[in-house]
Amino acid sequence: MENNVLFPGSTIGIIGDSPSGVMLAQAAQHLGLKVVSYSRHESSPVLAHADVALVGRLNDKEKLADFAQRCDLVTYESDEIDVQVIRYLSHFTRVPQNTELLELTQDRLLERAFFEQMNVNIAPYATIINLDDIYQAMPSIGYPCVLKPIQKDFNPKRIKVIRKQTDIADCAELVEKGTYILESHVDFEREVSLIMTKTQDQKVTSFPLVECRVKEDQTLALASMPAQLDTDTVQEIERLAQEIAQKISYVGCFELSFYLTKNGTLYFNRLTPALSNAGYIFNKTVNVTMFEQHLRALAQIPLVQPEIVHPGVLFFITKEMENALRTQWVLKDNWFYDMYRIPEIMQHKTSNIGHVLVLAESAQVAQQQIETTGILK
Image (cartoon, rainbow, N blue to C red; front, side):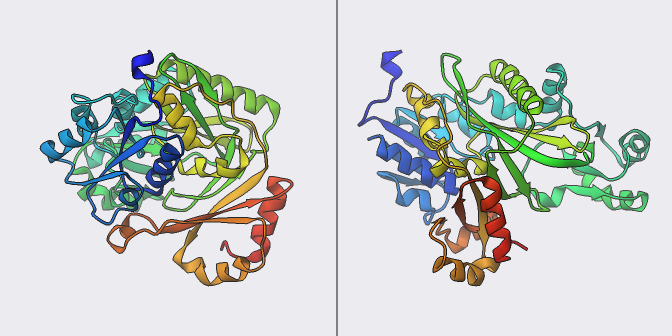
């Protein structure tokens, strides 16, 4: 084991371009680790925080091999990375997260089969090969429902919400491009996220539960911590999460997301084998950040037991909020800002330009303060 421990002066490789990559690089340097970053974009903000910055295509095997050979290990910070890229890097260096869970979660059929095996509640679904399959599935799936490609290509244009029968004809062009699943809409009241960390020797820790609010495009808008849930619901989430954590082959931080219906039924929403945007809330509210905990797992440093030090609410900033934010900038002493400095060439990937973390005596007070400003519409 000692040969795989990363000490100060060791080198970690980061592949990815999101704000998570920046925060991960900063956390690595705080631990005394050297950072090598690989990106497709010369202006990627992650490169600016690396000791060595490499730019290349994700299919450039020569550059990928050079990147991997410079590192004691490599980590990916987003689940949007191509599995084949990670598999190729693992020929030249260690990738503790490996590809097994990434491959599982990028295939919606494999993912659902796994959770059915775990006896976890998931939304009813059907496999769709042609348009007629949609019509035949409707009596059991019902309206509204969502048509999604089996392979997650993270392109929202390939996802179609079907609200009534006349919408089905509009799906013809989509289903011609491959196999899909048709998934029932879960009428949920709340969405809850649990971020966990798993080590090489199967130890698992959990961050406090986070309640999430998402936008129409399913991207995170707001996260509140700690989530206000009854004891039975918390225990059930923790039980399911522990069972899932023990079954997966993975090292590092990952996210489990659940829907909670009005009558208290839990449905599994998704598993993300990477750093989660919801985890940004732990930067000042918990005694260890998601980024340091992830690095500790990869570097085989003992994990910290996460404990709440301050309740808080985090919301993401868009361009439309800039003027309203200026007012709060000069008024609020309990608002903490993180601006992403995303270059123009990469702005198509996200509408977020930063986030604000609001600390207060409770999450409810923090959320009331945010709502009072009218900054979130």
